[in-house]
Length: 209
Image (cartoon, rainbow, N blue to C red):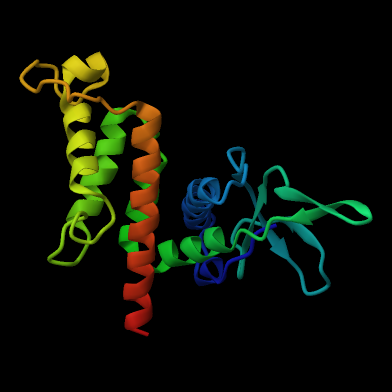
C-alpha cells in the first residue's frame, strides 16, 4: 500500500486516479534507478478507509488512498548464521518521487523516462536536461559529461551511417563517429546524466526551503 497526502487534497475519484497514475509513473521510473523491479506497479482501486480500519470501494473519497500492487523488492545478505532477507529501502526512489510531486520539471523528466530508451528518446532526455540545467554552464562545464562523451553521443544519435533507421535523422549528412556508441552505452551515459540532474534539482529545492 502506498500512501500520499496529495490524495487528501482531492475529492474527485477521476482526479485521484490521475494523480495516482502519475505517482506510479514516478515510482516505476525512479525505482528502476534503485534497481527495484517495479515494472508491474499499477494503480488499481480507489478505496475509503473508515475510522475503524475497514475498507470498501469509494466513489467520492475524503480523504482517499490508492491501492497499488507490485512484486516485493528485496536483497539478500549472507551473515555468519546463514542467509538473511533484507528489504531494499529505496531511499532515492522515495526522495525523487517526493521531488517530482513538488517540482514540475522532475515530473516532466519522469514522463520522458517512461517513453523508453530508444535513441530518439534518449536524445530527448539529453536535450531536456541540457535546456533545464538552470545554470550558465552546460553539461560539460558542470562536469557531468566530458566533451568527447557529449560529441560521441550526439554524433552517433544523429548519424544514419552509425545506427541506421534508429537515428534521429533519415539523411546521410552526418557521418558516423570513429567509434560509434552502442545503445547500451548511450543508456548508461543518459542514466548518469539523469542522476546528476536530479541531484541538481534536489539542491535547488533545498536552497529555497
